[in-house]
Image (cartoon, rainbow, N blue to C red; front, side):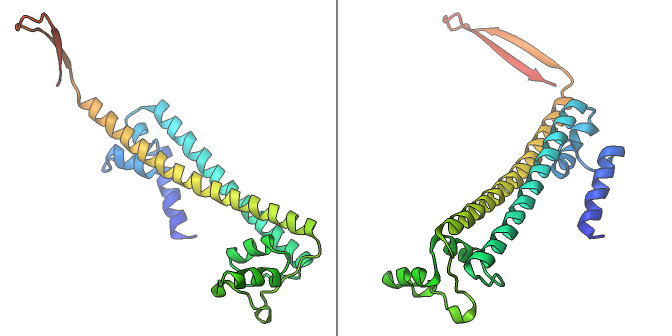
Length: 204
């Protein structure tokens, strides 16, 4: 079992069944959102952060999984309908074959703009030619859908990071709130003739 998996499982067990008293609640929540809140008996807050985390992780994994599914589909489709050798091809290649009916059309346009570095050599297995415009459009739609799903996965990963940060800040806020033993409100009437009233709040 990979070390990362062991660490994640260990932290999850601590989060669900025990506590690590040496860790500050803010650190706990930075590791696993809601953990710090749970250690301070704020179960409702902990539950919310935990549900958000589970939802984001599930969404991200699903997005990447479906993106890979469409990658396999459009690559197989291109092999069948554009005589493509799919081995060792980067993402830019798949974008290009969706925009041009064949390799010659692609190279001719890039030669006109003197983009010599972007030319493909059929002898190295980079050639393609679509059997119909409809199939090229079908391929392009699958490729775009795959890219959108991959971008969605990246966005959700960013949201997971934000969830960790927000939970850590929330745990820090709760720890400071617990240290406040009393609140004193001290009203004060101004003596400068403006008849204004100010209020001073002391936290002890």
